[in-house]
Amino acid sequence: MNDYRAMGAVIVGDEILSGKRRDRHLPHLIELLAARGLRLAWCRYEGDERAGLAAALRQTRAAGLPVLCFGGIGATPDDCTRQAAALAFERPLETHAEAPALIEQQFGEQAYPTRVRMAELPRASQLIPNPYNRIPGFTLARHHFFPGFPQMAWPMLEWVFERYYPHSYEAQSECSVQLPRAQESELCGLMEQLIERHPRARLFSLPHLGGENYIELGFRGPATATEPAFADLLAELERRQIAYRPIQPDPAG
Figure 1 (cartoon, rainbow, N blue to C red):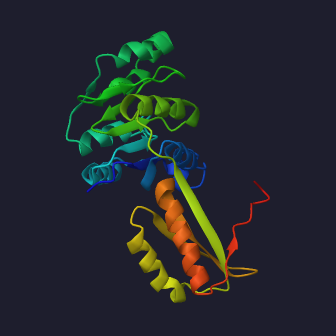
Figure 2: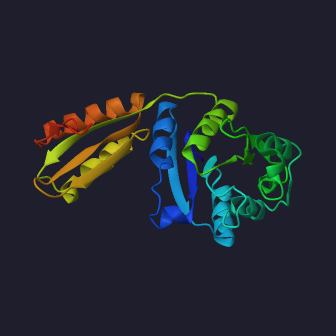
Figure 3: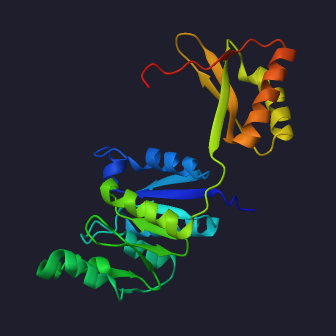
């Protein structure tokens, strides 16, 4: 069964994969989803290659989750997301009835012959308004396609949430402690018991190496799930006489 609070993300661009540009979408998306009680189930980075991107979108389509896709919807030859989406969803690429007028409003005669190509979308796409420069993104079967530029994509992303996912769920929370000098192998039995007793909370174990070695052990998820799970964790640590300490605030903020 799909997690109705989960979403996927696809971030497109050779410039991301080569290190020429740093991705800013992922941290913003994690924060935005958490504020709405949603979570990111997975994120894929894909290059500007039509066949490879189409194959990736076929897989994300089969996964059944809503997907947020950033990048590659422009008009230059290296932008191939529109074409890849058409292949993945087995729909022809055609001029959207409303998109050319929006592009003409922004660029006038300079919309032709190149910029107007951004109006060519997979059949039955729904437009996503772009308040930055009117060039729309598009939605196709719970896949939402945005430009790669954050100043354009993020206001469009807010519109998609208000339009398609207006309900906010319980905000996600995280509770954890540090276990100095602990070994993960010695804690596996405890972790398995906690997971079984608290299925709605997601347990995590993060070893930290260098300086003083320790394990950060805790839960993330809805507060109604993480709080009792964390209380149970602390009780088990006390019962088993395993030393722990609260997480210290990061001085860097």
